[in-house]
Length: 346
Image 1: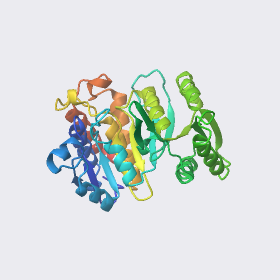
Image 2: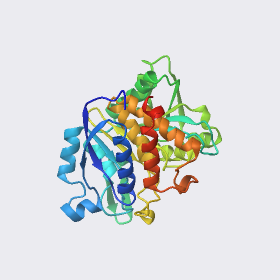
Image 3: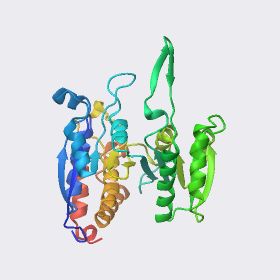
């Protein structure tokens, strides 16, 4: 348990619904096995919260995130075409979590169509079509507004370029549709270009969104980092997850100046809930990002090493990736690896 801090980190924990509580419990067990000290403040959100509190996001949950500045979140079902608004979008707006960060990287031992992918997707998280400004003009005609601001575009570009500089990434492409949406996407590009001037060591390029999707499928290796508006980033980040095995394997982080929420980006899979077969890898990878965010890099490295060894050895994996283990057995194997002298000393 060496190289872990003695600080106790208080984290708002949102288990979610469907398979959420199962994968969340597994990840909490794994994190506690690192020796890092955690205090978990657990809250329901969505339909479960409404049943208990008549609120989809209880005030106590808001207060907890406001106080802790840090949350770990499992999947929460969002109704389609009606019902309550997306919990994810609501929390991102409330806490100005303007940067959606998703690294896309293959796990060893897992065969995919695209081996050796190493992409970073940076998505603006609060603007664009997701501002939720929709109304019915007349019966049968709905208007939806897309909002792009200089402030929002500049800060997400700065986030991307500063990350690239810190982590020695070589290239950023801003992705747009400014050939059609000349003012909104044009402003996004203008801000990205202005920020790029301050980072001469990083190659800056621009690609149109539809061409980008084609180029990604043809050759994802031509890209390093992608900088995108909200809707484009939502779509492209899921597309890129397919390169490495799907949403059940990739992490997600929502980061602002004052708070951060780390989450599984896959669905709640109610059809397999309670069956002990869900894969905790996505939320576990998100928790590794959280460890780095709270300056527990040594623990993050140990969890990452244990996870990669688990996949490399093809032992104790869940059935969605070709194994036979259950959710709890996966967590048990991770904990055993963390407690072994080799992993613990890293």
